[in-house]
Image 1 (cartoon, one colour):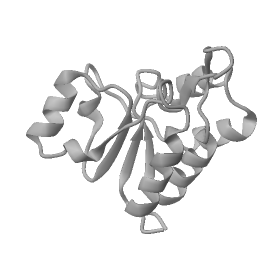
Image 2 (spheres, helix red, strand yellow):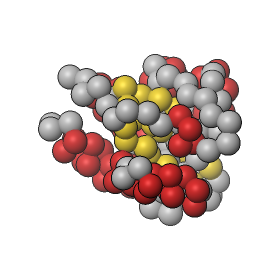
Image 3 (cartoon, one colour):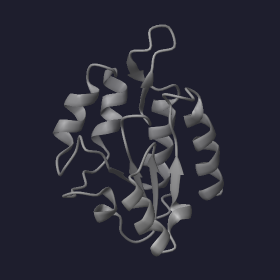
Image 4 (cartoon, helix red, strand yellow):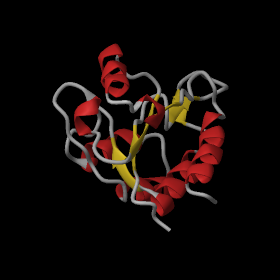
Length: 143
């Protein structure tokens, strides 16, 4: 069941965290489960500097960190485009998942009474944080 709510997904700090052993960039724990839940229950969009209108750049960026199953999920997520601030690409009913919006982006959300639509996730600092987000999204989707 799709709720017709957009979910706008950042990559760095959300889907890409750090490997516990090495501290090097790595696909975050539960990233595939998270993306799968998003694709089933929401309209998914990439909201990342690695997109800017084409998912090809997203796939190329994720490829060194992800297996073919994850990349197949990633390819089902739609692109967004913005010039300066990610908030330029946020429309309608949305959830925005990002580790670190700019002060201006947070101000835009606050001025539009949309700050509660931002879900802060930083898998670099908290490797298991996507599992918490999955539970929050299940509540939103009434699962």
